[in-house]
Image 1 (cartoon, rainbow, N blue to C red):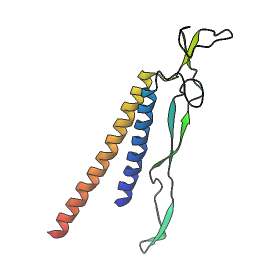
Image 2: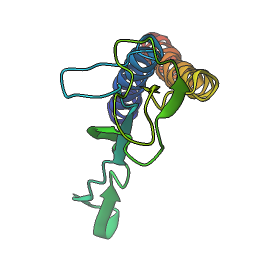
Image 3: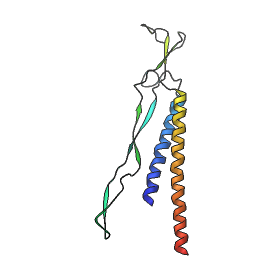
Length: 151
């Protein structure tokens, strides 16, 4: 039972980080200058399933029982989105406008699409809520088991 709570907790942690990264993307949707140079680049969270296969011996199963095929999820990295292009907006008076070349007078704005970010935020929020419901469900089952044990 506690394994299921640990799985849901790993989902909570991952989705919370994902919502934090999305919030950061939205906050930097118009940042044209960063410490790395150039416009802000959208970040995205890369998740990976945790697969732990363990065996434990049981007097009822001759070859033992396999448990823990899925043990939750973990964040492997927060990655900059270098694949989608930055937005170019013509604004020659902007301090970050390109001064030479064919893009003269254009300003590079982040590759952050607020609509996409909001959709991702809703999905992460729903996933977070689902994991909370899993924990609440197991908590209710545990309380019922205690009541049965007392009775």
